Structures are given as C-alpha cells and as structure tokens.
Amino acid sequence: MPIKSFGQMAHTFKNYEAKNWSKNVDIGKSVDLKNDFPKLETNPDKTKSFGEFLADSVAQVNNLQHTAESAMQKLASGESKNLHETLLAVERADIAFKQMNQVRTKVIDVYKEIMRMQV
Image (cartoon, rainbow, N blue to C red; front, top):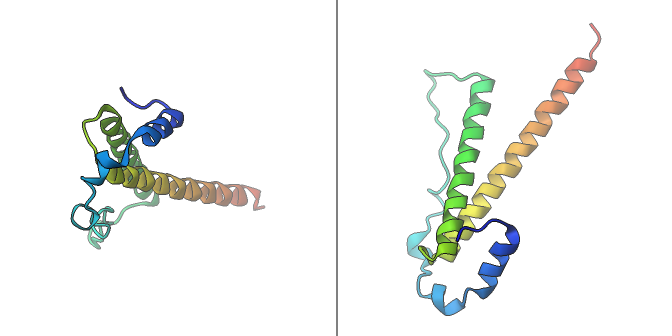
C-alpha cells in the first residue's frame, strides 16, 4: 500500500515499532553524507547557458523527488525497513525543492525589475 498523504506517512511512522528498525540502523556504515549529493560538472570546455543550467537543476530535483517517493513506498509496503534512509531521501528532496523555489522566486523578481526599467 503506497503512502498517499502525509497523514498516512505519519501514521506509518507512529506505528512502526523501534524494535523493527533499530536492528537495521547502522548509520556509520550505510550512510555516507559526503557522497550522497550529486556533484556539479566543472568542465571548462563545455559551457552551459543559464536556461540549460536551470533545466538540469529542475531535472535533478525531480529525480530526488522520485527517489524519495520510491523510498516511502518501499517503507510503507514493508519491502524496506531502513527508516533512516527513507527520512534522508525525503529531507534531501525537500531541501532541493526549497532551494529550487528560492531560485525561481529570485528569477521572477529580476524579470519584474527588468520589465519596470524605462528605456
């Protein structure tokens, strides 16, 4: 049964007993926070336009959202018992989405400012 809302997710976490997941939690070995995030390509030969950079960033955020959704579904169905990895995937997707939203807001503000300029 996939999780369809945050209420269902909260209910799942609330009813998930600590003895079920504490056996699987070995944060030091299974989670490497230094290598979890995608690295930006720094190839000076290939230059991207701002639009291409934004499109790639949106695609990365979308991939993180799909990864988080998949992790939640696996946890809810019982296929995975790694609660900490699921929460990390959800938080990673949330942070990426918030950052993307801030960039979008700044781009819109700049566009409005340019439109107000008198020629």
